[in-house]
Length: 140
Image: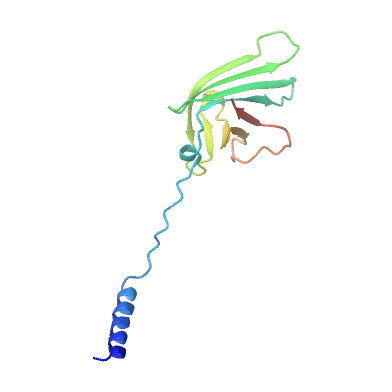
């Protein structure tokens, strides 16, 4: 057999071998969710706007076992206790794993989890609040 014949034969085997193994989708699904990729557990704090008071001082602690401790202090010059503390559970949203939802003890509040911060979101849609006011809590 000549060199040309041998080359054609080897090329034919290679072509047939490649044709019988169609390319497979080998791309792995992206598993970089906030729950896995970010260091989300910890204490976050900040000040939220308030419609009928000066401000709301907020501290939210997210624990590794997916429980939380929420402290809200309504700053006002009126008499009476304006500090509310809540403990409960939260879960990462299955449809948008960058969001967490606190349980009904915290009115099912929704937060976006970012690197070093969380941001309160609309409870119904998970979208940012439709205002320019600050709803971010910074990790301490």
